[in-house]
Length: 343
Image (cartoon, rainbow, N blue to C red; front, side):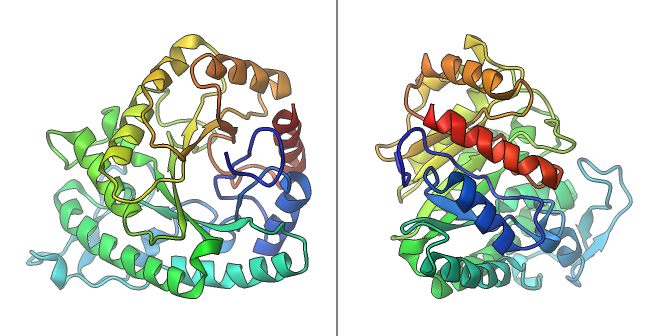
């Protein structure tokens, strides 16, 4: 598995409660420099709550209007297409902002790599949400299919700008799928109809194939982290394995890593049992999000021991990003990663 040192590699999902990308880069490099192969910028500023900042951008489109319905996941009104719009070609979206943020943060990343703060070979990691996740949270079901199309095109343009500005051999793109699991668990209304798993895998594989050769591409599979709680507690890793296998089979290019959450309460064999059926292609790294502050290092090691019975080789991570945590707790969390990785 990749990494710049020995022991288990560490993966950082993305967000952190820092004011600037430089603070994130310096803190992660100081505590985890020997264990990370990729480094995100902390999703600072308006990006601090995953896709929350996209709601206002959708609202700038003249083809969408807010509607008063019971929100599914966040306390903001979702959008519906205005009457008469029947084609994605009729819909205008503004720049989504991901390219501007990545290009700006990479300047800092490049400077800190040049001065030795960030180790040579560490890639700059950019997290992007799946269009299906954004559609399912912020758009009402009858309007989602067209929104998905236009948002996917807009995200493709963002990615084109990112890869034009950042050398491919220094770039890692992470596609983030969360709402997909709310759909699979049946707790959110969807628009995919029959064959939901296949539709999710097909869409994610299409995202993967947008990433050009030379750049790395990975998946962050997630059950949510609002208030440090999942939108539902998975009975086991079955849906995670099914999605990972489906995307791996359908994608035309290599997937370099897959990250999966492990609930803090789960150090039992039953949760990890589906991992026996994981069918990732050679060279794809598995990261398990089993590092929790709950239970400390002892709890993390219990979860590692349970996972090792099924998949002996994997890296470690938290379930999701650090963005919703108090800043003063992050150094200790970094240290826990490092101690477990070295152990």
